[in-house]
Length: 396
Ligand SMILES: *Cc1c(COP(=O)(O)O)cnc(C)c1O
Image 1 (cartoon, protein in one colour):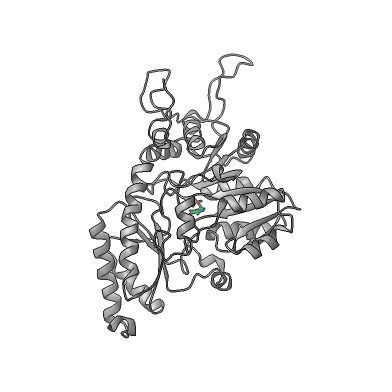
Image 2: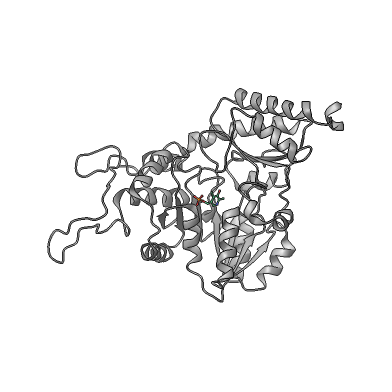
């Protein structure tokens, strides 16, 4: 059989029709905690599901291939995937993390630092001077998130990875916001890629899961050993659903980013919108870099409303097609208010330093008809404007 070449083919067909027992086209789900030995001192290829499970292995293999890695460990959540990478560090290690990283990652890093399990420096990785200065502190690991959450900032993975290598640091990229359909960090020099598979990879908002993909085989094995030790490997049923969702990753994200581009263009010209953060807009500071580094601009964007929290409240109470909820990457469009939802645990000072103000709203664009999404936003902004104290920009 010729080897599938395009990642889209891998997503749709890896592990298909490989069932040795009955020739099932879909890889079977093995809902079992344990596997029978064929005799005394004769284990089969599987022993216990915490260690390995056939369906979970198909998912891991598919994700490793999509990211161009040597191996992958499927975990119970995205946070467990990040923590699995962190577990490889010790007391003397320093991590450089983005100053505007995912709220949960920020909390995890801070909690482990407080227990003196390693040290953390939060750095604006788009600021070359700040990054170079941090690199003189001999970090062990650089965590990159691009595009970042929720401001959709883009940083240069290839350049940061090269700088990290020069000081002996490993590089881990959280690729949750784009998925391997749009960005492949290992090809840009990363040692590890992590995902919250909860988001685009599963894509249907019905599973919480994660994965770490390692560029190097020995790293992948070390992570698998540690995941077995601590028991953070994902359940067979979650792996089954995630692989099922992954089959349609490419067409989903393709359509979602088309919708996102239309939504961004609509918001960008609206008088009640101060600024739109979407790398597909030529005005976005990361536009050129995103064009070079990514295979598309993605389907996440954020924007600032004119006016304060009261306008935010009116807006989120008016939306009907969009749902007010955390998370992202599903087939349905969601709106979130980072300051009171995803990033509330960060503290006001850190939020302000990261540029996340109280008027910022984040959108995850789904698979609904473009016209319905825009009509919903248009009507909701009108509801804000009608009761607003008529800001100057709104009058003209
Ligand atoms: C959701 C998310 C995580 C955490 O993943 P969970 O599956 O919720 O544990 C980490 N990073 C990013 C960028 C995310 O969006």
